[in-house]
Image (cartoon, rainbow, N blue to C red):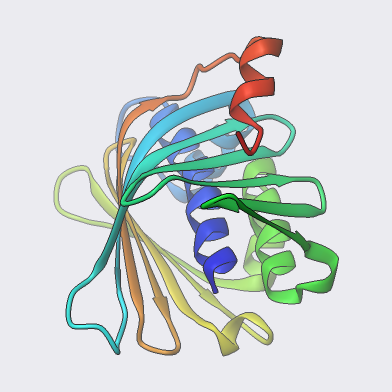
Length: 210
């Protein structure tokens, strides 16, 4: 489940990049999806609060997320302890406390489903997205809006109840992931840079387990 949560945050960060790079004004779902196609690289800060049914206090983590087209993702947690999660192609790698873990996404159908889903989001493919999720886009008062994704079928619906994004205008504020177990993860985003360009030296450093 650690890789599940990490991948959700990484994937959601792509939506953050896309939404914040769209033209100003109350966005439609099509506008949000269309904005994905212009994102070449991005960097942002996150604060994640995970409420687990068996714990009396939430688990809180903070750090940065990096993305570089066509699909390199890095989540670098700085608090409460250093952790790096990388996704590149069919492999997910984690480093924490000197321990390295590698996960073959082809052998993890749930995580694989998320990889495919957010690749479709990045391509702005609404039809493909709606084959996997029940998609609800709700305008709110003023420029506020909510986008809710609920899985249609197995294996996602055995683990995930919904992912809810909330924003104002073209700026995404939060992502709330509700699992079937009752665990809820709320992520807030800040300092979003959707025009990030990584030099070869920066990419070698950022997209590594160091």
